[in-house]
Image (cartoon, rainbow, N blue to C red; front, side, top):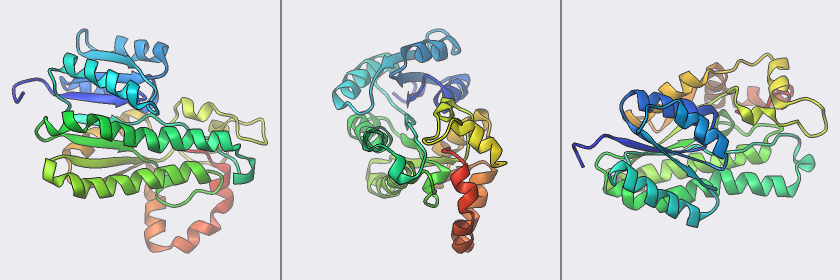
Amino acid sequence: MSNARKAIFITGGGSGIGRAVAIHFANQGWFVGLADVNETGLAETAALLPKGQSSTHRMDVTDRTQWRAALERFSAASGERMDVLFNNAGVGYGGHFPELEPERAERMIAINFTGVMNGVYEALPLLKATPGSAILNTCSAAGIYGAAGLSVYSATKFAVRGLTEALDIEFQDYGIKVRTIMPSFIDTPLLNETVPGSNETSRERVRAAGLEFTPVETVAQTAWDAVHGKKVHYIVGKTAKKLAFAAKWMPGQIRKMRGKMEASSRS
């Protein structure tokens, strides 16, 4: 196994951050497993990678049976190794809490948090069998301080953050690192959702608030740094870094930013 090429399994690999990370790791010679519910997106991402350097898996992260089947196929294709599990799949819906339908809230929890737990449970045997392996979870700037207008989404990212910190300690005995990337606003398909109670998309709200988009290539480089680095959390983008600073040193100021934060969308 030590002589085999390294391998990463990416959920949400059909677009956005997942696609950018797939390209980045493939360019470093890694084998890439791509998982998503979007088969068209999976095919498009795979077409951007070197031939023979990826496998695709149509999979719903909320279904552990689908996880198990996908990882069996990935293991066979990767030479029975997983150097990195990248739990990246996620959805986000904005709006004030009373405007958020319970069904949407439950879907966010199922995908954004339960999906991450499912991945850890199902991938753990393969990770334990691969020396120096890592789990990387996509968190968010919304996991730094509770974001008005993104209450449930923010809560799921706080849950991912807490799980990451705990497992990084627990899994030391296995030699497995657990990390997060915490990006601010990324111009991905997540921002195409219409904000409840308006005709605007989340992307339009972010721009109107004067907040910057972080390029997905920057996020991909940070993902690479995270799985090779020593910190637990890796904050990406000016907005996220400003929020982290304010949360640590002047949390009272964040509450005064309510208007701007509500006008913005999810990362």
